[in-house]
Each structure stands twice: as structure tokens, then as C-alpha cells.
Image (cartoon, rainbow, N blue to C red; front, side, top):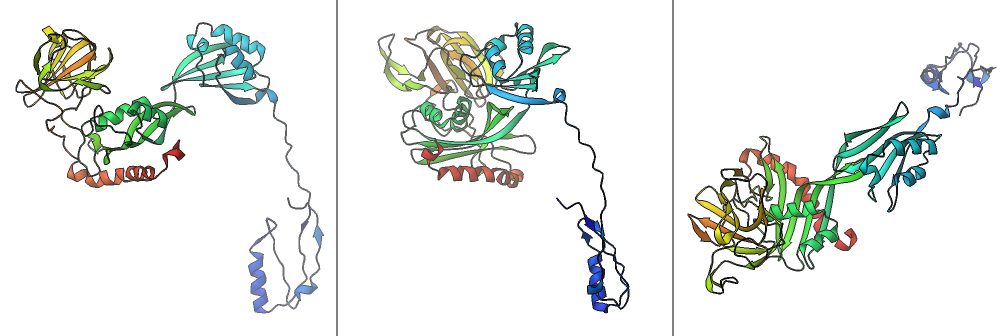
Length: 438
């Protein structure tokens, strides 16, 4: 801080050379200690002979009043611990006993306040005296519970949380199973499911995985009130299967068309999924001669059996129309879908159908149409899946599947511009130590 005294120069007339005069005029254009100072210079006077007169000015400062404690509020937060009640939580948040009692009274019928989830965070706004003004409890997804004091009563309102998008990058190695690998890498289940759906046309996740395969994924993660809410869309993924890399990036064109594409713009979406189940194992493959476990005789098996727990979701392998949904002999509960180009698919031994599914209904690829069961001629829960062309069963694991349209030529420049940073992220993680990531 500058001193209280401000010096002002008072000068006698003097004469200066033109050079000195220009220098003093230049100096006079700059503020001195934050103030503009005027110089009066007389001819024939040396600067060394100028007397200095000191002038002291008093400045009045505005009075600063201390803030009233009653008007001061603070935001506090606490993580819910195992065994916490709303009472113990309010105590840690330094809410006074009067407001804590009123809060418990006014929220006694709100179940979520009595079923606190460990790890979640509660935010409160309080005064210095411990008065509770507002409590915010983020439930997850896009929901939050807001309880605010109004006229001395705590009132509840469910409000949508404002979600922020963060980009996450994860990488992992297959040592035993895909499930174990994604869990170890901290990848949400919904992201793992997307990876399988995106690359299902190129990788058979039931038979092709090997120890040492690795994946890298870039995806959106949504946060609300600073807490992770849910995983969003996969933006880019690389899966190295048996030494062969498979890459996919998400792109949305100006006309609204979107999907996952290879780095050269070719669509990864095939007309048919390789498998109608997310995860399972093949218990019986396509064969011209198989010993039937129920009939105890050798006969052709014109389909693929996928062993999976009862209730596992069954997806439509392609866009189509429901031709049949009901009971059909040894198939038990079965769905038959009719697709374009004389293709049809069969899903047998279902425990139940998707809600509202019926003949003539249009379905899209990956829509849930039913659930694995053991109805009909089955010894245990599994899905019997058939792929037919002109009514004749074909092996879906050997048939070349048609692909969807690539990125339009007019959109290729935008495609490369949009996906370039995503490719850079995949390249960066490919050379990163997994041990460091863990």
C-alpha cells in the first residue's frame, strides 16, 4: 500500500533546451503514484534548482460494516457411510437439533430418506447457527431429491439433476473372461454391452476370445452434482482379438444418420447380428448329425444352441416383422421374424416373450423379443437359434453377412475431422502401461 503522503512538485520558471523540454513533457504524460501530475516549467531554470514542496491530503475511507451472521449461509457435503441414518448424517453436517427434529418429522414418509445408499453424497445449505435451509440428495441417473424449508416446513420436490459430460478412457486385458476384464478396468456394464454390440459383426464374443486379447474404449460419462450418474455412449473402441485390431468410432452426419464406422468410413453394422444373445456359450452347433438328448437318436441339428441362464435377454438379429409368437411343438415358446431378402430367424425354448410382442409387429435390430428358457423339447435353459434363407436353415456362423451403407462421400471430410481426436485417444492408450492405469 502506498504511503499516506502525496508529494506535489511546485517549480520556479526556468529555461530548458528543446531536448530536455521534450523529455519533461513526455514524463508529464504518465501518472505519478496513480495520479496525473502537471508540471509548470519556467524558462532559464535548471531542474536541480527546483524546490520541492510537500503537500499532505487527507482521504476519507468508506466505513466497512461486518456482515451479519444471520445472513451467512454455507454449503456442506457428507458421504453416506454404511449404517448411517438421516439423523446421524444431519449431525455430521452440523444441523441444529431443532431443525434436525423438524426435518425428520416432515420427511418421515419419504422412503429414500430412510434407505440411504452408502457412498452417495448429501449436500446441505445451512446458516452459521446450524439452521437447515435446503438439502439435496443425488439419487443417480438424472434424478435428485431436493428438500427445502418454506415457512418453517420442509417440502420435497424431485428435480432433474443438471448433468455434465466427461470423457472417460479405459483399457484392459482378457485373462479369464470379458466380464472379469471389464470389471478389473473399471468399465461399467452398459459400456461393455455396447462394445459387444458394436463389434458383434466382426468378433464372435462366444468363441473367438483368447487370453491376452485387449481392449481400449473411450466413452461419455455423465455426472450430476459432482457425482457419477451413469455411463453414456461409447465414442471409440479398439479390440485386439488374436492379434488383429478392430476399431470403431461413432459419427453422426448432418442429416442425422449415425452409427459406428471403421476408420475408413465403412459401416460396422451388419444386416444380421452374429449372435442374438449378449453373453453366453454355444452348447450345440449347427450339424447334419447330432445325438438328440431328448429323443435319444441321431438327427440333424439345423441351428445353434446357446446355453444361458433362464431370463437372459434375447435380441432380434435384424430388422424385421414378427411372423409368429407363441407355442410350436418342440420349439416351445418361439418367435419367428421375417426379414428382407427372403431371410427369417427363429428363437426357440423361450421362457416368456417381450411385453406386447405379437404377430405383425415391426422390430429393430437388437430389440428385446424374449427371454431364455427351457420350454418345449429342452433338457435345460438355452436358446435355440435358426437362420433361414428361403425357408432353409443355414449356419449363421459361416454365412457372409451383408453390411450397411458406409459414410456418404459428401460427409467424409466431416467424418475424418470429427473422428481424428478419438483416434488419437485410442493411439495414446495403446501405448500406455495397463499397470499404470490400474
